[in-house]
Image (cartoon, one colour):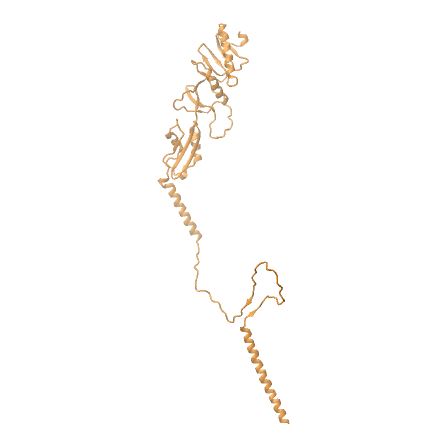
Length: 334
């Protein structure tokens, strides 16, 4: 009995050792299988899903982690070239190109102005205008239209306006408007033309129909009002005096010349021996002429020959007789 018990104990011990070895092998195998099997994690709830109406199709997202033992990623063998720009060299090249362009623009004869094309002139010649423009032989890129216009108007006051336009490759067009003279003013042996605004300028050629005025002194000079064109020269005669000359001109006798006296204004020397003056304002000029004619008829009818008559104020004319040479009123003279 004792031997059987000892055998059963030893067998039980061997069986336990064998079972333990089998268990260890199975655990090792299970660890190996777990290390090589991917772990899948799902975010889908295990709760029962109720059917709901679809508002829009949305894709489900799954996060899967793969465990790859000893996985290595290698870089591709293709190498992308890298370009490095040198800013200093680039700037130097650009500056060089710009310098070449500027040099060619200033030196090429094809871009140089030969002469300006002048339009609108009748008395001023093209040569005279080109002589002051200063564009002949210049590069078209150096011509400044505003400067050319200023230079032209400052040299020729007989031009009321000028317009300068520049076109490639070498064309300059100048359009001018000349002043039209209405008065030929003579004074101290010289003469000048005057337009309707009172601006005086050099006579050129012959113009018919001008009103001849012989100035016995300088007309009064007032500060001219500002004009729209700052390049317009100041007027030589006031606008009021110019208008008075144009209104009085038809009444001047055919054998007489209109005169201007700084003290008495406009008038003429009558060939019958006296001077008549009508002031410097065109206001009531027709009335002044009628009063003058009535006064002359009255004096001649009474056998009197005046030396001086003034009707600058038609309501108070006066005359001076040849004998006394003293001014008297009209009533006193009669």
